[in-house]
Length: 79
Image (cartoon, rainbow, N blue to C red):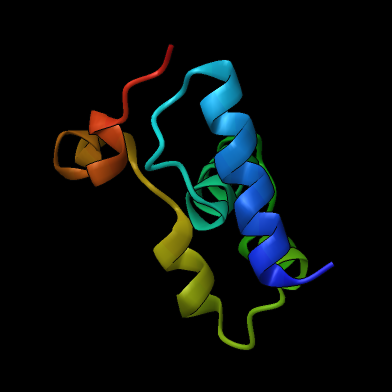
């Protein structure tokens, strides 16, 4: 399956269930990484899972609670 095919599937199912069409594969990766961090996974575990060569890239995926008001994902409309 190609990257584009996965993007189209995410867009299709987001529309079907009525969530914001701005949801992307990348935003789902960011959400999963943030949740992994909150549940206690180490940066090294998350880095390996994401396939990042540099842990600083992985750290950039983790969204902290105090930055939610500035995070573009905070404005996503669900349902």
